Image 1: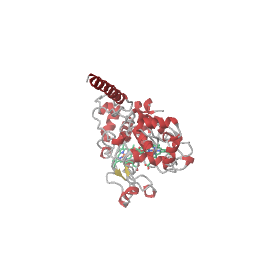
Image 2: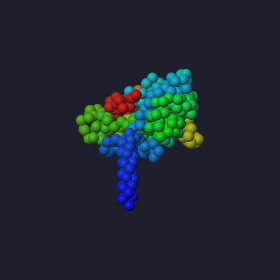
Image 3: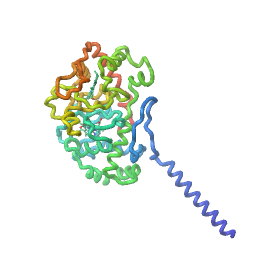
Image 4: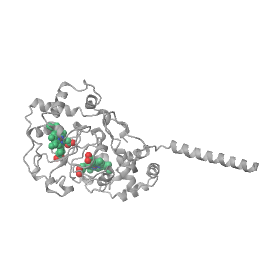
Length: 345
Ligand code: HEC
Ligand code: HEC
C-alpha cells in the first residue's frame, strides 16, 4: 500500500516534470506568431492560416529574397529587380526589367511597399496571393528561369537552408516552403512613416509645407486623383485604361490577359503611390520618366484610345498646380522604410 502511494507520487512527479518541460519548450520557441505592427488608423491585412508570421519564417524568406541560388545561372535574386533603397523597385531603373541572360521582360518592376495589403498582384492582378505570385518570377524564363522543384533540390543540399526550413515549417525545403517564406518576409515590408503619414494619420499639421498641402488638396479635389488613388495605400485597386501615349499599339493586353474580355484591353491595376518618388520610371511599361511627366499626362486627360476610362478628362491645372501635386507625391517617401536594416541581408 505504502509502496503504491510512493509509486503514484513518483509517477505524478515525473509527469509534472515532463509536462513542465514541454510547456516551457512550447512557450520559449522562437517561432511564436507575430502580428504586424500597424499605427492607429491603419486597417490590418489578412495572413493565410498556414503561413502565420514567425521570426524563423521571416528570416528564411529574407535569406531567399537576396539569394541568387533561386535563379538558373545563380546571377539574379529577387533583390536584383526589387532593391530596398528604391522601395524595392528595379535598381537599374529599367522601364522594363530584364531577367537572366539579359532576357527582355514584359513589364516594369513595381515597388513592394505595403505589398501585404494588395488584394491581387501584378499589373493585371493575375495572382491572388503572395504565395502564388512568388513562384512566377522564379520560374519565368524572362526573370530567374529556374523550376521551383530544382530550386528546392538546391536548398536541400545546403545545411543552413535545411536547418532554417525545419525551424520555420517543420520540414525540409520544398516549393511550399520557398513560396511561403518569401511571402512571410514580404508581408513585413510595411511603410507608414512618410511625412504624409505624420500629417494625415498622426495629425502633425506642420509636417507638410504649404505647397505640399496645396498639392494634397488638388489631389483630392480639382485633379481628381482620389477617384482611383484613395485610402491608406493611395489606391482603390481598380483597373483602368488611362490612355497612355502609344496605348493603341501596346502589345500588353493588361486585364484582358486574365479575363479574356476585349473590354479589359489596356486596363491595369491602380498602383500604390507610397514611395513613388523612388520608383520611376512609371506605369506598367515604364514609359514615363518623371512624376512631372505623369502629372502632365493626367492633366491632358490621356490620349484618345478605345477603352479609355471616362474618369480621364482634361483637368486644366496650371503649371504651379502641377508642381504642387508633384511636391505632394514626394511626401509619400518613407526614409525609415528604405533604410530599415531588418529588411536587408
Ligand atoms: C527580372 C526582374 C525581377 C525579378 C528577378 C523578380 N521580380 Fe518581382 N516583379 C518584376 C516585374 C517586372 C513585376 C511585374 C510583373 C507583372 O505585373 O506582370 C514584378 C512583380 C512582383 C510582385 C507583385 C507586386 C505587385 O504590386 O503586384 C511581387 C510581390 C514580386 N514581384 C516579388 C518578387 C519576388 C519574391 C522575387 C524573387 C523570387 C521577384 N519578384 C523577382 C520583376 C522581377
Ligand atoms: C481613372 C483612375 C485614375 C486616376 C483618376 C488617376 N490615376 Fe494614377 N494611375 C491609375 C492607373 C490605372 C495607373 C497605372 C496605369 C498603367 O500602368 O497603365 C496609374 C499610375 C499612376 C502613377 C505611376 C505609378 C507607378 O508606380 O508607376 C502615378 C505617379 C499616378 N498614377 C499618379 C496620379 C495622380 C497624381 C493623379 C491625379 C492627377 C492620378 N494618378 C489620377 C489610375 C488613376
